[in-house]
Length: 191
Image 1 (spheres, rainbow, N blue to C red):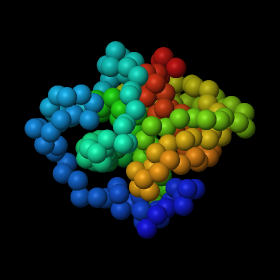
Image 2 (image 1 turned 135 degrees about the vertical axis):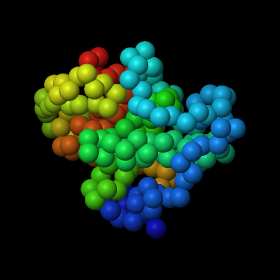
Image 3 (image 1 turned 45 degrees about the vertical axis):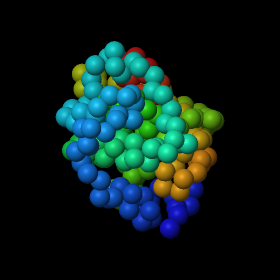
Image 4 (image 1 turned 90 degrees about the vertical axis):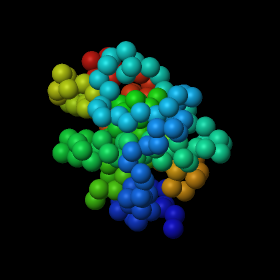
């Protein structure tokens, strides 16, 4: 079953991927999706400003091991989101120590969408000033940030295995801009 490009609801496809039976503890003999170093279980959100300042590299979706690497990333990101479900609406992979361009956004009805190699290609509808918080920057609660109201994003959707161009507005636009800032080495207090 494939998901329409504009779906952000509990359509079944995203929920199926989110609830996929992934081993929550990665094989420590496996190679990291970021470097040729062994994976280590991550127990906390990255809060170090130097690490958060690093620009993430794209996922190589042509690599034969791409899906296995993405499964590890997804597993760790879902674990953090689920552990912080009362406050977490989005997460960038670098927040769990994986410096690849992957974003998770919690959608309606606890569905999730994963954006691999996301790029904002257009902004419109004006800007809004909003207060944002961040799991990686707990010392900056309610930081005021200026965001575009509507954005068009191009990303690889791992559910349908293709690039998608999709428009996001309102809260989803804000969340995606926040997470893409993370991928670009920007964070609250530095945006």
